[in-house]
Length: 69
Length: 436
Image (cartoon, rainbow over all chains, first blue to last red):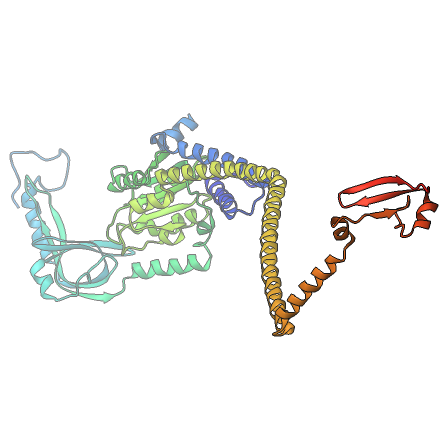
């Protein structure tokens, strides 16, 4: 299974909601899709949190010096 | 030239002097001006137009000469706008000149241009075009474009001049996206001959960072000569083979450098490059995620509630079915009774009508002497009643009967009976026959 990314997670979430909106999913499938969807929402929210914490600016030369030193 | 006696020369030197530098500079100018006027051909670079003069450099593979032309003379040529641009192949006519400077200003050598002709596309541009075709033919413009670009990078590398305006523009673009993750600045010169190798090193160092998702290379506009570093073949090949997508933003809308071709994405400004690096608007994505989350919850609840309602409906169904049938049966019974009543009424009416019709027909069949016949019948009935025994008894006669109630009509029968019963009008009494 390929590594989860924000775009793959949000794409899958979109597909889940589309399936649920269609009204064709039975009770068991609906509950399973809801459970999977909630996991994806948590993942996406964590990814958004990662890029909302405040700009963390570094200098490459300092990083290189630190790695070499 | 006169030797300055106030300052002594270098001891042991066989050279003449020392001469005053201004005097020497003036002599140099005279000597340079004495050079024969000629025509030169080369590529124009670093074209600058000031109020009084037009400055540029003429270059070829073996050297370069700074040139200056009076603005008035240049405009008298009537060249199209922008014809004298970096990279243009130019033929100039003129001669050497030298500004000797002063205590407050620097000296300056230039080729004083008296006439100028644009010779066609410059070699520089032609060379760039040849290199572009080679890179395309080798397929080096494709690998970067095939790399996946994350919609929401966590770490972005930026290559730009340390004090360049492009740096602020990148930050503005990232802020516009609402992105505030990790940024790694790789500052490098972006226009001299050291630029291309320095940019290449910065890119490979950035690409060696595991967590890096995308790299932006940004530089503002400039002449073709200024942007030449971004047409460097080695730099282009380095970018083409990087495993991390590079977003290039070099120059303005009209400039097209070779790294624009090999990079994953080419943008017109550093702000756009930052926006291309973060395709997602973070705040909008968060709102959308909130909506999706609410929809999921709604679907989950509705799925359970709908089915619970359906089950409740099914559990009530048999009772409702019986009640519905009972209601229907009662209705049918009411209708049946009403129908029967209506039918009886109709039949009664018909029977009465038939009775009336029969009476009418009977009356018609009896004829006109019906009254006389009735009267005669009454007379006969009266005569008949006059002969009834009861009437005779009322007049004082008596009827003798034997024990069996049979009439005794003669004396012999009376004697034979011994005892008889005598019936009067008001009753019956017994009697014994005695013969004297």
